[in-house]
Image (tube, rainbow over all chains, first blue to last red; front, top):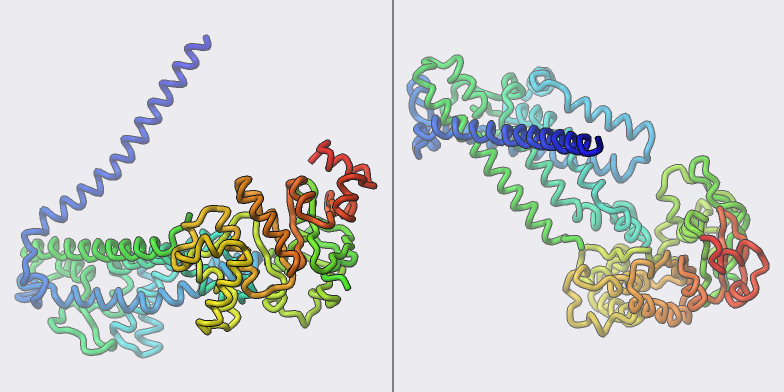
Amino acid sequence: MGSTIASRKRRNEQIAFWLFRILSFGVVAILFYILYFLVSNGIKAISWEFITQMPEDGMTKGGIYPAIIGTLYLVAGSMLFAFPIGVASAIYINEYTKDGIVKKFIKQMTNNLAGIPSIIFGLFGMALFVNQLKFGDSILAGSLTLGLLALPVVIRTTEEALKAVPDTFRQASLGLGASKWQTTSKVVIPIAFPNIITGLILSIGRVSGETAPILFTVAAYFLPKLPHSIFDQVMALPYHLYVITTSGTNVAESRPMAYGTALVLIVIVLIANLLANALRKYFGKKVKMN
Amino acid sequence: MNKLESINLNLYYSDFHALKNVSMSVKPNTVAALIGPSGCGKSTYLRTFNRMNDLIDNVKIDGSVLLDGKDIYDKAVVTDELRKQVGMVFQKPNPFPKSIYENVAYGLRVNGINNKKTLDESVEKSLRQSALWDEVKDKLKKSAFELSGGQQQRLCIARALAIEPTVLLMDEPASALDPISTSKIEELIYELKKKYTIVIVTHNMQQAGRVSDYTAFFYMGSLIEYGETKEIFTNPKNQQTQNYITGRFG
């Protein structure tokens, strides 16, 4: 009797193990297939001209230079807005508020913000930044809208980073007569910094690929020149991709360029991630724990 | 005059009554040991002297705690200033992820002292006092994490001494250390009491016997017995104290 139970246990164990193994390898396989699909289709479009020239002939020829620059501006702009505000809010929530209703409320609201569909952000951005504040369709309006979208990600990851700092460091610092702000700025943030950068990585990835929030706030259908100020419109990679795939002058002829655009977008996100990871490692070494 | 004193001190964590009517006093330049089983309130009591319990949400205190005769829970008291007078060493060595030098200089820097000569002098003096100077004088710029556990703890003591407190609170300072490092810390405590008043929490009865002049036995939030260490260990008046000291529970 006992041995059949044991063998059934072992068999179930094996089944579960293989099921999980297949599923997780499946996930990896899908990721690789997407990359393969993008590279094999997009690589033909990639050339020096493609990434340095203006689009031509109804966006069926030429390059995507203005869209690349536009996306870089939007990512930088949104981070300039979301990163300091997000980090400051997380510091307030984690270091300054006591457990209680206020803390719960702020956290719940932050979570709710994260759950809002991005098209709603687009609509809100148009109403507030474009119309109400009269920024017009502009880099400023688009960056602020994207920044709002990135805020919850920055707040959440920064909070986790701060929580991971052992309380003994705070106590040691406060025990030496340091104020709360000195403790936070001189001890807690340097230790949490490598993980705070993770928030930056995640939000850059999120922001650079978003289409809906820039749709009504900044993105231009076709604008073969570079912006002169933050009040100018720009082209952007995700929107450009959407345009030449669905509503360009000649969708079929633009197809290779669409794959090329997608590949460039992925590569930009990848470079941002690698860069931020390198930064994280660099700062991580400086505060290495025992 | 007593250096430290608590009068009818009660402390509550939300509904939990953690300290019950604790009244005791510590004379200057003596070592007082707080002993008792886990959860008896000895660490909580220690932390009332530098108001570390303030950091925990929902803590309520009544009664008074006096430092040099002045109530440290008075509204006019700034905790930053109090903690400069009452230094603390924690259970596990917790140096900052900074250099050895910057660890010791930290307390001075946050209190506005940035003059290099002053810092240099204070760092050396503090490291000498904590008997660490000879071991680290050639590598002050190295990370504190390169030191051994015992060295880290002496670094933490130096860090606490640098701001020139008059009282030193030690929360089981040797419990995470090996026997040799422990005896170094104990020798150090013996030296330090010439300049400082020391209150130490310990789980180790022999340690309490070796380092302290007075011993307080806590049980379930109450101070059961307090007196000269020799008396407590050889001739305890209370049955619970005797049971604990002889190892019948704890």
